Amino acid sequence: MSSLSSKIQDVFNEPGCGKNQGKSEKERKKGCTKQLQPGGAAGGCAFDGAKIALQPITDVAHLVHGPIACEGNSWDNRGSKSSGSNLWRTGFTTDINETDVVFGGEKRLYKSIKEIVEKYDPPAVFVYQTCVPAMIGDDIEAVCKAASKKFGKPVIPVNSPGFVGPKNLGNKLAGEAILDHVIGTEEPSYTTPYDINIIGEYNLSGELWQVKPLLDELGIRILCCISGDAKYRDVACSHRARAAMMVCSKSMINIARKMEERYGIPFFEGSFYGIGDTSDALREIARLLIERGAPAELMERTEALIAREEARAWAAIEPYKKRLTGKKVLLITGGVKSWSVVAALQESGMEVVGTSVKKSTKEDKERIKEIMGEDAHMIDDMTPREMYKMLKEAKADIMLSGGRSQFVALKAKMPWLDINQERHHAYMGYVGMVELVKEIDKALFNPVWEQVRKRAPWEETTWEERADAALAAEAAALAADPELARAQRRAARICKCKAVDRGAIEDAILAYGLESVEAVTERTHAGSGCTGCTGTIAGILDGIEDWRPAPSAEPAKRAA
Ligand code: SF4
Image (cartoon, rainbow, N blue to C red; front, side):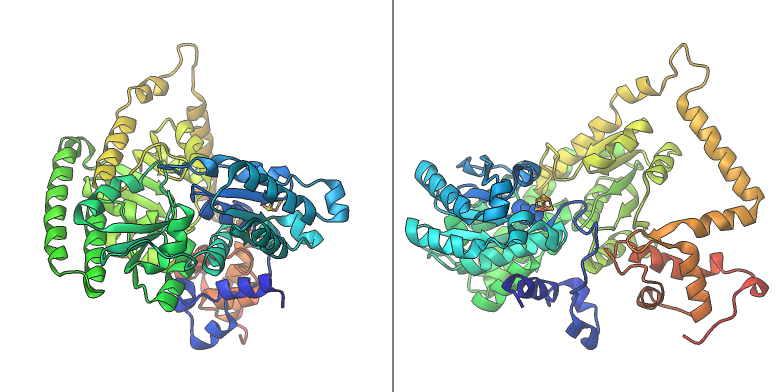
């Protein structure tokens, strides 16, 4: 087995991963390794994920070995900020061409590393593998080793070509690269009992700097943030931290777990979004540090700081609370933000009418239930049409999402706020929460909405009225004809990877008495591709009483 294949298998079988923990002993042995499906890299390839995870290390040169488009796709695609060097924002690529495809691109890669070292003299060069050189067999590990020896500088191979899987896998492979080649290779000039690592935080819009002053005040030193605003040396020395906080569970759990295993650094998963969560995270950091030998008085100082900061934040939010209480929010994001932002919004009096869980782990979903109750409206996959309808029917007053869904809100002439990685405002910590509330208030009460909702003087009917009338006619037709409604429901494509419609799933459930998502997948193959539809399949199973045909119409049950 090639080293890349075994690395991927290792990453898939990560014991710290929520999905793996939820499996039986037997299933865990099988791991998560599965055949890759066409389209698996849609929404970001593994290379993109690796670059996103490591590019915020600010003083190193990030060299992309591949055609120029790979670097073009991934360059600066998140708004991370640096407090020092700007070298990380310079795009370096080997820009391989047809000749390299025929004769191999290793020489070109070596020359590129040489040129970077001579012109920029960075503390290290990170070399990212992409699809084309991986397919022609360029051995970046060997080139990096030779270059490192020749130039006396760390040259780190990040072996995560796009075709091996999605962005999330790339995040983890990037973690493996720094675990193998960077972490533990240097020693800090001094250590303190107050040294921590923050893992999975990328300093988007400078968010880390909203929390750092609080830690500074407590005397807690961020030995290394992986990877927001990090320097190469910080990462190399990070194995001397006393405790760690993991910010985004999905992206870098392997780093946190392996650092605990190798260097005995305990970690917890926390969030700095929302007042309550920020306080909890500070308490947990203090608790872990005390457990590892810091003086117990740290907790008293932490509690005093929390009390002061919470009071300040509430006082700043108070004037907005009156205007925002009762406002309904539709939250289309994922991962840790699907629950941490919920808590933050509820704190300011808003009601979250739905939160998307498409990219969330099992733990994320559990947290949502804890915060929003068992009846939490978790949206697995909402079509733009459904989003539009929800906003239009005023089931939500504002949508918070990433840039891609903004046009749905704008079409519905409803306020929208960007809370994903491309956002321009920082929402972390106590001040970040106040900032989020201010931005929501600005978006909700912007007079532009009233203006754009007015009919133009020359229009008899607006396009929305025509669209609403068409939707109403369609709904009336379905209500009048249950057979048509049934046919439309059954025709919905549930698993796009395996082209399985809802009707086939319903038939299999009834015919074979299937009761779990795994059983449906085994029988119909639905959910065996990107697994994005498994939540929808679970919903079909849960709602069986709503769609089960009358007994006479039900197909005879066969032996499973
Ligand atoms: S690494 Fe592969 S999938 Fe990713 S951008 Fe480059 S060519 Fe496309």
